[in-house]
Amino acid sequence: MKISIKLKFSLFLALLLIVAVGVLSELVLRGVERNQRSQMEDDLARQVKTVNLRVKQAYYTGTRLTPEAFMKQRARALAAELASYTGVEVALYDTDGERTGMSSGEAPAGAAAIPPAAEGALAYALEGKVAYQTSGATLLYYAPLQGPDRQMGVVRLSYSLEGQRSFRHTLRNLFLQVGGAVLAISFVIGYLYFNRAAAAIGRLRRSAEAIRRGEYIAAPPLKRRDELGELSGGIYYMSKAIESNIAAKDEEQRKLQLAVQKLQALEQQQKQYIGNISHEFKTPLTSIKAYVDLLDMYDDDPGLLVEAKRNIAKETERLYEMVEKVLQLTALEKYDFESQAEWFEVAEGLRDVCARMKGKADRFGLTLTLQTVPAWIWIDKESFMHIFINLLDNAIKYNTPDGSIHVACGSEAGQVWITVQDSGIGIPEEAREKIFEPFYTVNRDRSRASGGTGLGLSLVHNLVEKQGGSIELHSAEGGGSTFRLAFPAAE
Image (cartoon, rainbow, N blue to C red; front, top):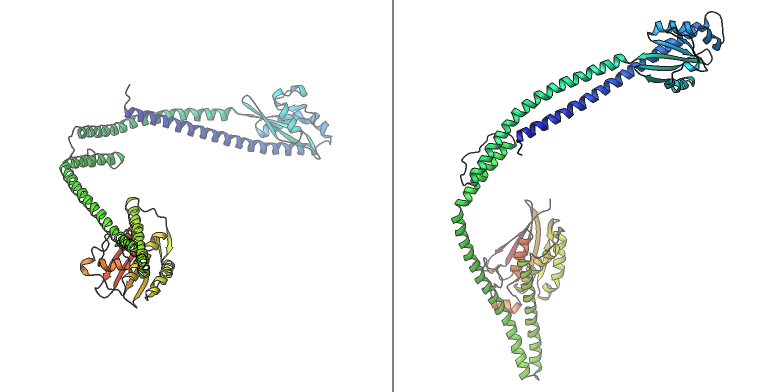
């Protein structure tokens, strides 16, 4: 059976109101009861003080008697007199727990006249403590009766609870009547309010059904400043988005065709890349094979042996370096070159790189200088080393005799910049756009002579971008090359 949402909400509101009124009335009634009890105890304590004061006054006036004799002879008259002072029924007991006087005029009945339910309270009072016991609609309040030197008995005040109970009963009925009226009115108002909300939900449902049929809406079905209004806006924007997506099918098809063309171009580029690898690998292998053939023919020529060993070692090193960089590029492009970024101090890292490369620079007669300032960047340490070892290696390979290499770093505008400047032959203007492509070299003869593979700058470019940085070339042909790298500075 389908139940309307407005009925569900109305019933939930009614249940919530019932719980709220019930809890509130219970808390109020308990508070009233505690307040009545507190007032009653204060009132009875004051009356006990009055009783004690009057008993002492009666004891000290007239014939002097012992406390026991005083309680037996004058308790009945005192009880009647005290009842007129306090306005409640008064009973007096001696230290043995026997009733010796009562304001109602009854004769002392001894211990047997004590109500069974009050025996425990009387025993507490005989020990010098205040105790009370409820008996029906009456509260029996027992308190010690003090003599001149010690306790001479107990006074019992009978306090009627009928007025308090009647007040609480009236208050409870008032809560029930007012709560019932509030519940009925709130249910009607809530039903009417939720009826508006249900009508708004119905309009949203009809709009959704129209979209499902392909009938797109031209304006939001509701204009409200609440969650239903937000949902209405969401349905409207969804309708516009679906309409726009369907209208864009032809555009997507065109993009798909363009993607196919790009994939074909990428395939062609991959073939060219493989061809370049094969060509570059073939060159050192050809040189090695030629020297091996010469050694087979002239194995007794010491000069040839020395030259062959030197050139084979050189070509082997070049081949090894080429294979290593190809593997690094492949890992970088296919597997995102796993890295562990950390806060890294640039000046310390550059000093480490320059220390590693200083020996090679000295061997070529080059001067390597470093100028740094303290700066921190977020980068993978190994990637940092790869980047600057490759840049310094290129600066050494393509430098001039007695040349120089200068490394500097600084920070500005939230970035840390690092420059690697050499006094080499420089890079022509037309080659600047291609130097970061794999296997591209400005001068192939000099690259082979120096062991260059054309992969170093491509690897550097990829590593810098993976670390969120940028690299630019500032070069003038015949005047050396300057590479400027920039990374976001640590805040």
